[in-house]
Length: 196
Image (cartoon, rainbow, N blue to C red; front, side, top):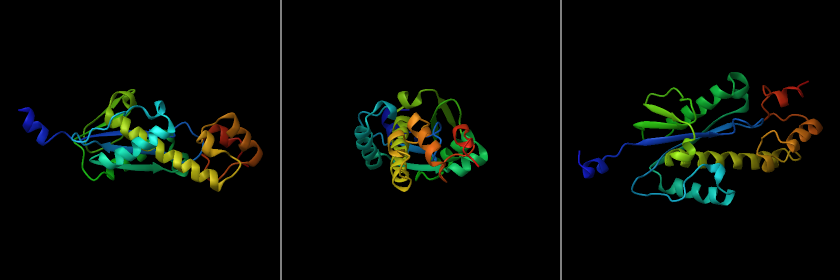
């Protein structure tokens, strides 16, 4: 097949990544992104390697230039009901189902694939190696960080905007002093011990 013919109809590859698996509060958030080959985005990499400012700038570029994108979630209550791994897979499935275009292939960060009706591959360190996954990691991280800002306003004293829901010493001290919120994951050991 000639290169010109291929470029007229490129493979639609969706990158998928999640944020928040190791947190003890709030949802796990997944994003799916199909990039537009005609609109390359410079600087895509693992969201954890970017400053907050750079992540936000890239997130705006991804939203403006990608062929399509979607962000989805599984709530803390779902995580408690079906466990964090299954809830992560559900969030990923929801993100893919919300894409405006059906992908020909999905590439997922990590070593597990959600059950989807399209071919896929799991890639360890995919958020560092695959642009589509990098883009998804950035959208998921920005979305979840914004969620933590909202929870920070709703539940003052927990410093959610600072630790983003991870079980830091500051977060655990707030749990001990203030108790758990409805957004905490009750099945997670650091939270479970504060259940009445």
